[in-house]
Image 1: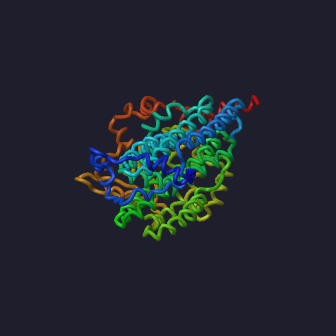
Image 2 (image 1 turned 90 degrees about the horizontal axis):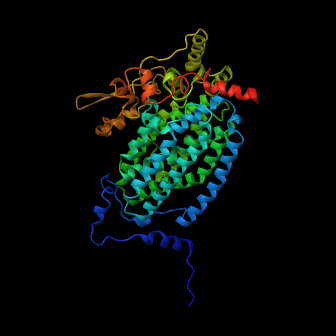
Image 3 (image 1 turned 90 degrees about the vertical axis):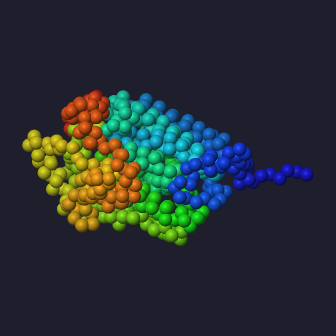
Length: 501
């Protein structure tokens, strides 16, 4: 009798699910000790679905084909002096920010998925985490290789990993992932796979890759496209985990909703850096942060949460605050860096008159009222030789670690937003109701936060003055990596190259 040919679903089951085994001399709960301590209840791991049904042999085949094409373009970019084709040397500062703030997060994701993949009793979740872990490691490598060409010609690309661990503003993305990795395995998946990869990832990767394309950076565009098929799988995993948890047991709903509220807020605080990049750092702009937020969250995210409402999930808490914040956050973030440009690992500048007009057009209700007068005053002071720098150190939020200069969106956008909470006789400061709620839910976790400003003031960061902190602790090339773009070594080299062309 002829053997019946297996269909794809049965073949995938045999190559993945049937590789699992039952424990003969150990209790299953002892083998997976983290599976229950968050309160999540799993009744049937076999209900976990993998929409892509990708086996390891197919995975390596697809990835190797992408690698061949990717590195061929990298080589061509380097051989043709691709750095001379970018729209403006100011653009390179966005890549410096990406390398020091985002690329290390890919490595944190690689480590995180490798860890939590071991914690799940279900083989489906373990295989999904394993593949995403490998994806994230690949993204780290391709991003480093893409940007290594710029390192030969511009300042500020050296020691990116060292800087990520130590530089004050990079504690914002670093603390985001460390918060997720120090949570339980299910919260990690919801934080990264759902809240970040599914709900918010388009607000990170689309602006960066579209911005790169509009500004002639084909190396960055290429690694972005190469990562997109991986990101499609990651987004699918994010949606699968949320539906899986909600369908397993009704007691999971309040836990999942609490995590959605927390990680939505933490993610939006992190993305303020992206908004600043879109509105201020791209010479050729793609769209405003406000437009991106409306497209990728209010429209796409609104449809998602409408779909999830049948499970009892509502929109994330404080989403209405973020809807108002989209008018302000990019301007306030760039003003922070302009004030502290002497302590940043990239250059800052005042927007040109054309860029100010563009911002007025994109933010007709707020920019001219709140922010244009500020930039015009800064321009006047700089022309008089009184370029403004903040000489003090900013107060930081205990949770998101953003300098507390964002304002009250619900009440008065001209008033600094400030919250506080007491824990065991100590007073802690937060930038918003969202961060205040997160702190009060887990104060024992957030009182341990490593806040750069506190560490500098305690003398733990290289020396008693700022120059020693920058040179000895951050390893910045003072005067080259940081301060104003105008007159910087980056601008001087660019003008020399163009003069030779």
